[in-house]
Length: 169
Image (cartoon, rainbow, N blue to C red; front, side):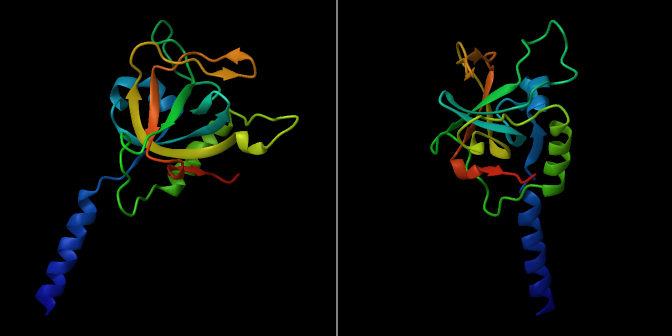
């Protein structure tokens, strides 16, 4: 009986160990090292915005970007596609402490938009689970209060809106 229990414990441990933890990153992390993140499944922490033009996750500024490198951008469009997006593993778990540690850094340089009217739901802190994809051809431009944001060379593709988790302050 002990051998059976020990064997079952080892098997369950092996299954858990085989599932790699979800990498928690900031928008700026992805922007700084886009080739490394292209095609990878991650949990991105940032300011999640909902606008007429679409949904996106962003930070206001990204420190440490190399001048003369990629165009400076701070926005990653978020698309929902149940067929093309990665399916979350059963029992998906994201390190809450790491998410809030990253959020603390983000809040130092990024703020939520304040609207004279409407809902506060247009800008919220969030973590979004999906795959980073390089944009093909010309990336779309997102508008923000009449100003065009820089084009984004990548997007995050999520299976559904339920994989965007809003964070409390």
